[in-house]
Length: 94
Image 1 (tube, helix red, strand yellow):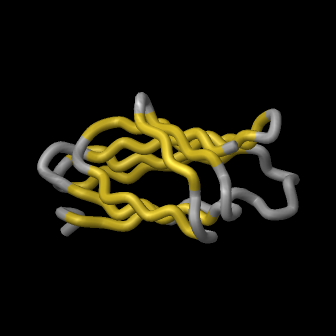
Image 2 (tube, one colour):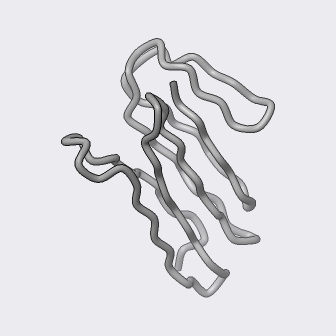
Image 3 (tube, helix red, strand yellow):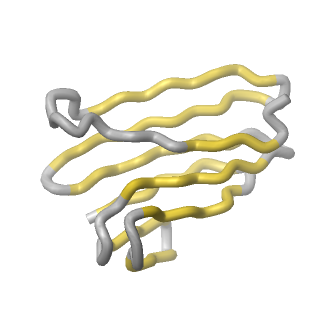
């Protein structure tokens, strides 16, 4: 039922596609995900409906800088995992 779901976007490894986005209407509302690769950055956008949560898993290079709003992290491995509550998010990875 999409009360809890997983987000695992993967940008095009060939670099041919520079952006993608999609959404689905769940019984809780719109779930949206997108990514853009631009000037050495990967920008991810997500929309999590009210009363739901999502596990976000991004493939990153160790040492990558990750920022979302006023929060920032440095990747210690090749995956970045974050639990997301309802809301809109923009993650920027350098």
